[in-house]
Length: 167
Image (cartoon, rainbow, N blue to C red):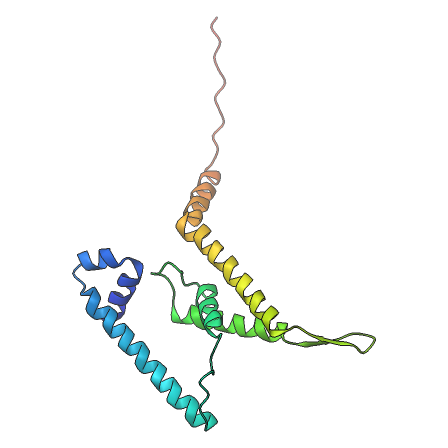
């Protein structure tokens, strides 16, 4: 939809979007209003599901959300990303959090569960690596350089003609 294109343009470069004739202040205001409405609906659904209210519910979930979007292909610098990529990133983060929270039982009967703060540290390290890869790939143009290099290597090589010597 045109509104989605405007939001994506503002996320990519707000000044360029303004020069293109997009009312950036209005679109950003509408985005914040839509975000607040979605958060309100999520709160109502949470209260209806659990039949109680917990003001601390969802704390430290910001790390998971940001990591899911970045791992799903979104750029921390804006302008890139998709809903399906974010869902895939959320699945990866959920899988990693579940695997790191498993109880490991040794052969001698002792068990070990990774503390929750170390699970958060692991997710944070993965997030930092994803951001560094994003910078390396998108900001430095690594993909384009790799494509150019492969294209140059795949050109047919012509034999160099022998030099003629003077008689």
